[in-house]
Length: 157
Image (cartoon, rainbow, N blue to C red):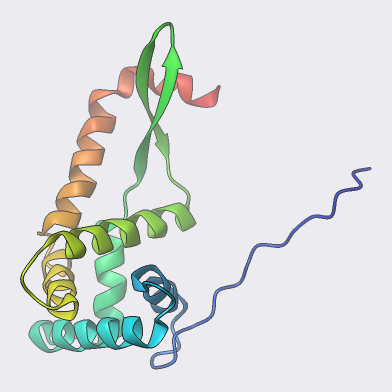
């Protein structure tokens, strides 16, 4: 019998305004230098703008955005016989959401010239309509996985 204590998975706190766990996680992803109130203000402003432009509920918009950006496969590098192979593997639910958050934040931060709330709102609207850079990143990942399908049998090792 193992002597090591089994650690439980961390539970995430819901956000203050909508009481939604995923929005709370996204706020933590946006946060820089521990400034959570600034991150909350940014995300809530972006959600309000996106909700006004799409005519939907902010939580509904956010869930649709995450659904549209979440990948179903990812590529993992594996060294075999002197070369690095990109092996396509399926993604778990938690990892899908984490990748979607990473891509949304990185795309918004890459754009220059506007406040973060505006950049994030624009990316939310684009992702809601299945366009935009985060959705392109997902499609590119899926294309690469399709191209490297021949190496999929290495995934179990």
